[in-house]
Length: 304
Image (cartoon, rainbow, N blue to C red; front, side, top):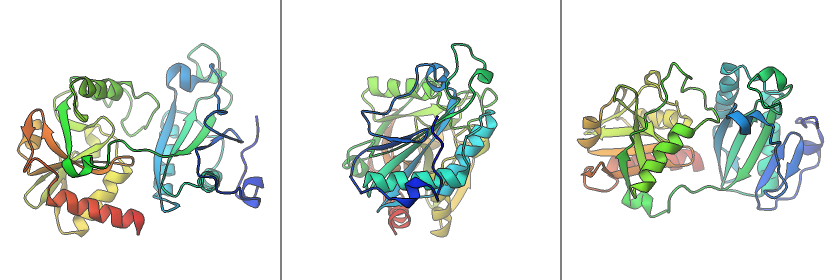
């Protein structure tokens, strides 16, 4: 298996030309979408045994790379997975991947799996983790949706119980969220609300949720069993800087139904307003002034 290049290695010494295409780094080698392959014995494929991160690139600059890599390494530590390179090496390769892609506006996906093993469950038969870095583009919804807002229903599929696997681990096993998302798609909705095991509002299928009432913005706390999003943390800071009363507290669907505004946040989604939840019109039935304000402030931070 090839050795990962470092900041002083070949990748850093001879920058590749900017090509404007999907670029993939897989265990020491550069690939295109067509050439990148993983083993059918990789435990990431066989068992969802691994972790990942999603990061945005704005104007050729990687947004909050350090925070995302900290979470990636923490997630790996939590599941006894050793990432076979340092954060400094991961940073250098990520920057080189963005440069090679030539994409000024891009989405980066880091994936670390348990690696190649056998058909058994035991991690001890996987001697080395597999590391993949993908640089591509992403768009969850059409641009017009950010003006009209999302239509959302509550999914019957709850988030996994936080004592089964900590929601702070961004693992490759996303099946509950995919099942919830599928419920929304079947119903003709844009996305879903997911509840926890006792009925509190947790998150969307791949986003965090915020509700607005007057000058107060609320979002579920990290201890409630949600994934603590990097975008979520940025928005919390922006809201407080803007003078809003920003609180982290448990919410139920009544809080959502009666809110003046509701919006989702996420690395891929950024900040997107909600116009309808479970058939109830939210506020004026379109993204409101607070949502627009927070979204504008987020754009200023990411593109400033």
